[in-house]
Image 1 (tube, rainbow, N blue to C red):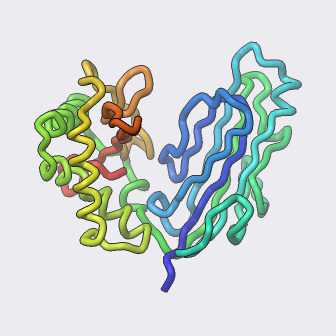
Image 2: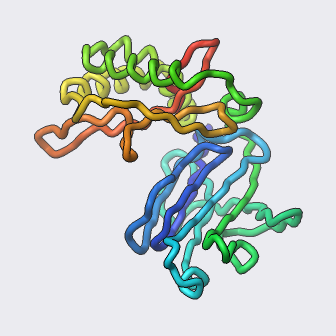
Amino acid sequence: MNTMFYYLNIVAGLCHATITINGFPLENSEINYNNYNNQFLLNEFLIGKNNLLIIEVSFASEQDIALIKSFQINGTLKQFFEGDVVTPEDGKIIPLTKIVGSETKEVSSIGFGDEDINIEEKFIRLQYSFDNDKYNYSHLFCGNPININKDQLTNYGQKLINLFIQKDTYGFYNEYRNKANDMAIARGKTLKEVEPVVLELIEQAMRQGLIRIPEQINVRSWCNDRIFELYVLPDRNLITTREDSDGMDFDLPVFITLINDKLKIIR
């Protein structure tokens, strides 16, 4: 059976956008150019039924409210299968349930109206839900907060940095394996199939070396304090390598949680 893929396509203008699926960040950055157009593969972030997509858009304090009302953001959720060409024009549209307060309505695309704008705070918030019957990672994204202190998280981040500096490919892969496994399943593969490629990429990244060793590791929490992002100020991924001779680098986001009472990279 062909592997099914869920793609979210978002088109937007100048703003700061935070886009989360089931509490996990797909985008959390300043969009400083018009005609932002991005496609997100959602498979490894889904929870079966009642997936929650939230789009929060904010603007500079001096922004005129008329310009905010004329701001454009739109998008669609689409289904593709293995072998399909993934473009914004192709794929089967998956209906979304738009949630505004206690009211809901079925829509075929993402967009906003006056009811979605907080004029005082110059803020737009859109909320949608949808079901899928293929992928369910609710054990990661849903449930009570995880009780863990910041020192444990930053110490784990330092452990990852040390493994990278020591060029301990298998040691780092041991921390990365849960992510590799979920990514493989979400793409219709097995861990055994993708493991050689992942190990080769880790080795290549270690040969290039870190662009700089972080002096301080910072933490952001997501998914009701269940998943923790490790990053370097001002807003750089924990693992960022020097460029190779072709100008290519490795820029690896690090999201961790407890797996069998041990911290591991999961996304």
